[in-house]
Image 1 (cartoon, rainbow, N blue to C red):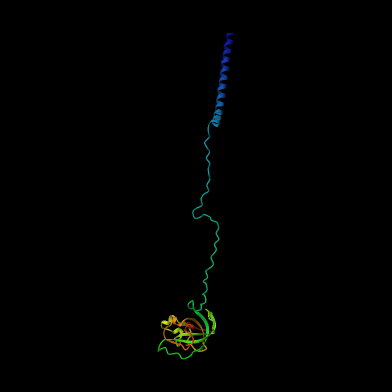
Image 2: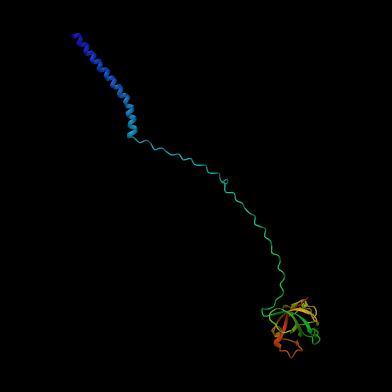
Length: 209
């Protein structure tokens, strides 16, 4: 009876020991799971860093640009020379084409003096200005000298290419009046019945075809 009691005690102790070991092993298995659960629930994971992938910049001087189509400007062309304009006189000048119909006397030699000689023309065409009469009285400076060969101070005023004044000559005349506007010295004028205000001074006399 005593022996049985001792064995029962030992059996009880052994059973307690076994249960204690089993409980301790279970606690050890549950601990990692608890830790894992605690980490998930109670702690914050470090923020994930986003990695941006940047494209490498093209090397300097190699940047591509849209294809440009350049057009060559047309070669500049120089305008052709404008045709020479007919000589013009002052704004109030009269330009006509006329024919010499009368030279009332002889021309005085120029070694004596300078003068203006008045002769009569028949008007063929009025180029510019206004003139209605059929005849016109024109004073020429030193008519014995070709217009292009005048050398004195009047060479700056009187121009043209007429070489000789004679009846029948057809001239293109640039005229202005009165004669005294340009010449106040000797004058050979047989047309005393024509008012001086109606007589013109020839600024230019060119041969007309």
